Image (cartoon, rainbow, N blue to C red; front, top):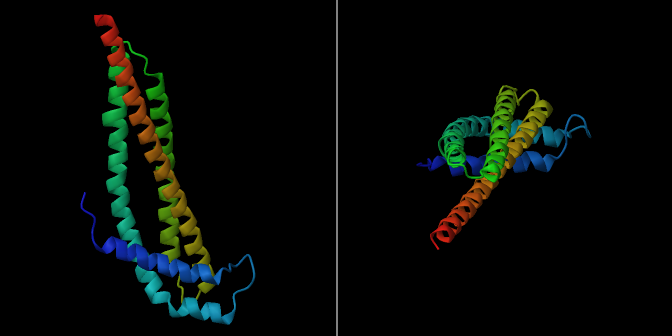
Length: 183
């Protein structure tokens, strides 16, 4: 998979923008924003909107590509191997358990991504020249939702590692069983 060279720059710009917004560290439910903080958001509004648009586009592409890979891991590798192991009368309970946990996390990833995408769109639809506090709150919420999506990806990768270890153990046990049967 070829990653566009602009993506790291977009992510860096978004991170820098979030750093500025996080520096303000105020929301509508906390302490009222000062005029200086509102001016800072007003002044960086155009850059922020451009960054959000680029982030939205790059995240959508990344989500589709990674989503297809994660889906294939489940349907084309894990499930098929589990079925084959079971059909050959071997114990696949550990493999099946990991696969079920992986699939559950994949479902969570899908729903969390939709929530993030909707929040990012909502933030991008706010006029940050007129509604600085609402814009700040929406971007902050989108950032939290994006962190949750990242956590889901980390979990799926951990399940993939666990599945690989379980396959390696199954292979070792199979070899040991077939070597023992030969003697």
